[in-house]
Image (cartoon, rainbow, N blue to C red; front, side, top):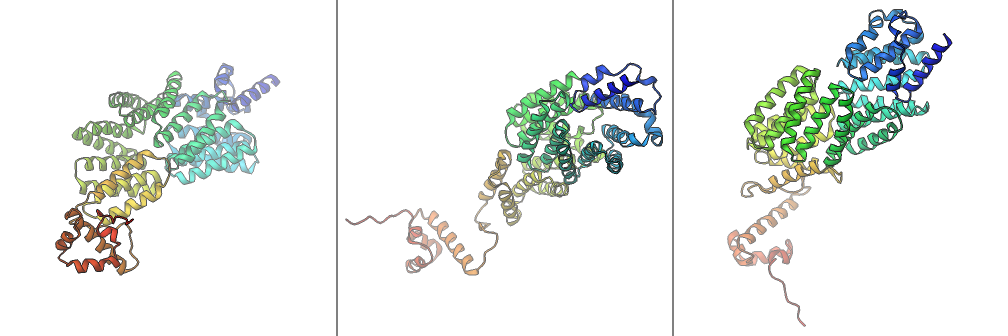
Length: 486
């Protein structure tokens, strides 16, 4: 019996380093024959369930946990929190985040009452993951930060690396891509010292997403290819599908449309087999390939399919991306009114999700859609976008902003007069600004001749001379310079 206790202690110490492959080789063959509610059997079954879940084998995970799912009240109190935590992971892997959240919080309460800080940290992390799946990203960030602090106090570096990975991934979803990259790379440095290739691959996928936003597509693609190799080696169909999805999106950014289409088609096959809830995003990616080829009818059909799937999955994050892309499609077809309606809907969802970068992107697109019908609102939106971007290294969004600015600058100035400032404090300032604009327009039409410009405006040269008190002389005659007398 003493030997068994020592073996379990060794297995659980390996778990703290992420060496699940070695744990799998050391599990005794007869673990299923042990009485299911004895401490040793419970601890072994929890390890078996974790290993099965990491490999995407949810049925095997359920088989290991079945006695405790059915009769949780028979589990000894000392192991109750730990059992609840692994059952919560089981529900999380089954795409049941609400059940996972409830169990994770209950496990946290029980372990806190028993001063079991090891379980508290892991319960916090799983609570954050469930909130992340429920798209409650702000709450998830708070949970992950708290988990990092708990792990740091316990000097559990491997667990802290996992929490950094989760934190970085959610920060990316909220639009803080620079901070996300820092957290993700910190997590990767920690995991490189562990024996957990699986979570290292997950980390690489998440850092690739942040790199794509920052415009580093080639580096992102390398990270994704590394992750794909790992997931295919361990036959994890769900994560293989997700990484294929992200590779396709990255290849679109790199203008490699044929490869992107092939990758998206393969992702659809994998996703259907794995029963993924993210299939709508694959159809949205395929639509973007069609849009890049100007195959607008095909893109519209794909987006319609994506929308139906996203509604069935009740995924707000997928809905907002589909609406955003549909708005782009309408803009490409010069259907500005339809684009504006779609983008306003997308903006409302993005604000609700607190997805700041997506919100900025949608506002830039809205400015393009509104510039003909509501130029003042377009200018206001563009000012918000430019203020939010500032000097942040976000090349894709800056290109979208520049496109919006070009549309506004190209407005027919016979119909619109747009001041650079949203508000003018004094009426006199407005009159001067208008006068300068009228004079500049007339001077342009008169090819720089002030007398002809005065004629166009219907005023006398004497009146023009009076303008020197308002408009500097060099603006009145910009093409002429006085020669200096020696």
